[in-house]
Length: 307
Image (tube, rainbow, N blue to C red; front, side, top):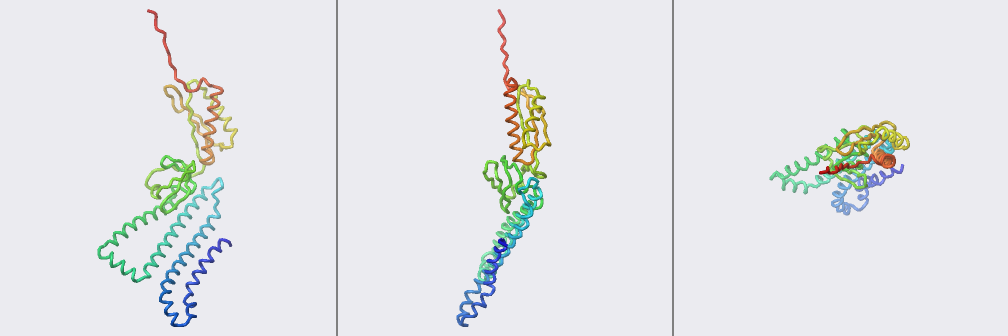
């Protein structure tokens, strides 16, 4: 009911302008004729604006009612995020069309404005060029919005890497997308960016994600001891979802070996925390138990032979 009350005021405004001529007719006839000359153009504009207002409020109420059934705060929120993305983009496209059509109806209701516009632009063909460029831009944005809504290369709250920045999709608008960076900054990019340039989506098919940790040590490190310690670290934390746990030696360089640890978590923020936790605990373990296995540079000095 509180949400439906938002519709009451625009409806009352619309009804007032629809029946305003009946209210004016109560006045003496000579005064009515004079008032109507000035009132009718204003009335036409206000009726169009009131209808647009009612339609936008109805669309917003419909969006709120639909989104109410899909909670994005739950852990398994993939379906909810899909629906939120589609409904929000379609709502903005609908509001855009309502605004565009309303503005067009107001402009063409004035004969003088219509004739001046045609007289200025039609003969030179400027109108066609301007409308062509404008339509191309508008259609490009609308098509990009529709493609994002239905193809869904990303959704609301997806974890993405764009322009070497890691964050979450916060807003999807017709002309721009807002990405909330991990350090609370906001990256704003055009809608068409995501359709023209590559980006990483870490939660495209699931919120679950695998994180990687790289550790560089000396050749003397016992790998079995590292694996045992990784088991203890993961068993003692709630950040790990219990699915993926791998430690592999992925590179052997001149002065050190590289070990890669793969661990899984329920979502990208948790995976980040888990990676930091595992890295810290493993480094502490090596410092305490195998300090001689920390990366080092060996220099061999030979004594000069006796003459």
